[in-house]
Length: 381
Ligand SMILES: Nc1ncnc2c1ncn2[C@@H]1O[C@H](COP(=O)(O)OP(=O)(O)O)[C@@H](O)[C@H]1O
Ligand SMILES: [Mg+2]
Image (cartoon, rainbow, N blue to C red; front, side, top):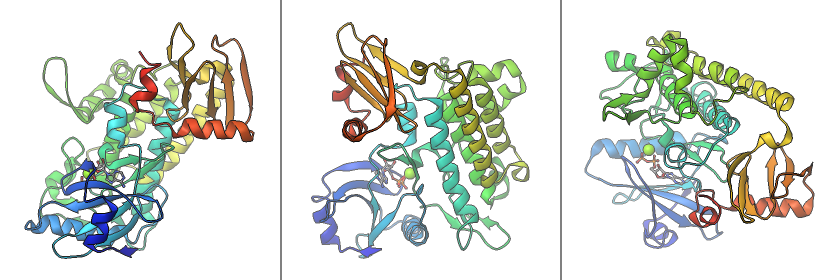
């Protein structure tokens, strides 16, 4: 990990010109290192607030000991008294929260399960694979970032804690975010890794319902997704009405029901009854395998894809996973390492392994920012 001076970070961020995020601890700025690698620089807002300062140091200590592909990497820090800052690898596709709730693009169940499994792996690693178990402490979709290929990167370790040998820790104040808070912890102030499991249960719900953890319904009433879901689970018919209708197709139903039952277990009131994150990962992997099996048996080639729009002219957009989309008079998508091409009427479907030329094409498509207006305004309605 590199130690930066305040001056160096000012130069890297072009004097803190570009804000890319805000959170409880401070603002996050975009920066570019001398070797052109992009970074995110988090600067603490209030230096007089002892708790904020502690959170900052805490995040540094914890992240500096972690190495996992689904956890955001800390590349360096600035320890100058007046300007403590953390430098992370830059994760370009925003948070899972904005991906789910601020865009209208269809997101396939496979992509959702992929993000879910990757985030779960990160938490299982924190709980069971580090020298001392670590509790994340603020698991939510806004703290899961998405990289260029929509791979999940768990972030924001300000409220993380090492657990003592008996696997618990007492908190002196309520930490976490409304809508994701473990009710058992609220009662006892006792933190265990099962608090993360509860919060993760809410993230699973967000992925399958595409509703926010706390949202306003049609009657202007504030709803808590976890509560609503747990009561819906008691009535079998109500459950499926909660699924995001875009993915609630017949062939997805079995997997969706399985995933919702897993969420329900994570949301149990008693921490002891919740599964461990390792068990959650195992289950999610099984659902992923189940989904792939149903796709292989039931789908005709075109059914792998969601049509976003078909213009009367030659532009249309197809998306197999949100990262594989393009617009042109014909269209191609990558799916499970294969490249599929369509002509504009969907009459022909070519299916072949990627060779060099198409690889370049595909890389170009993957690089286009999915939420970039310019890409979509010419094709999406
Ligand atoms: N490594 C990163 N790459 C890109 N954006 C980031 C990165 N880290 C943080 N951000 C952005 O900054 C926001 C706040 O960061 P976060 O670490 O969650 O801070 P806080 O503790 O203040 O909530 C995030 O929601 C995200 O939009
Ligand atoms: Mg945050």
